[in-house]
Image 1 (cartoon, rainbow, N blue to C red):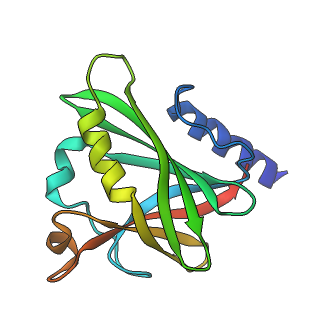
Image 2: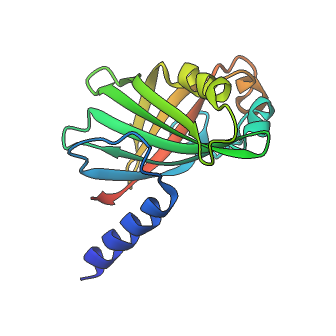
Length: 170
């Protein structure tokens, strides 16, 4: 009964932030919630490089199908104080530990701003990356090449990991 209640609460909470205009993933079976940004597996939490601070970027969740190959990431960000939604369909090659962007969608929640320039920044960061899968509960970090990665991860760093933690079945 606890598991059922927790699952229902998770669905209600994640649905509250979603908009019917977001992309969807048919056959979605698993959900992971945004955890943090990292520089390496099992590494300490870091912030996004300051270059991205004006976006007020908030990743929300990832849902995957039963194969764990197809995923959908949802997020929100701001342009001139106006809220934009972002969703991205991703395809993973689990044997190679790589993931790439298949399709994305961005729009202004109130149709009051053009979200495309920041959406392009997110598309570029998610285009084609390695990912790390580690720990228990299971963490997945998409290692995104970000301007300013050295600022948060140290000299020579190119990537910052966008980390989700598996939170249950849908």
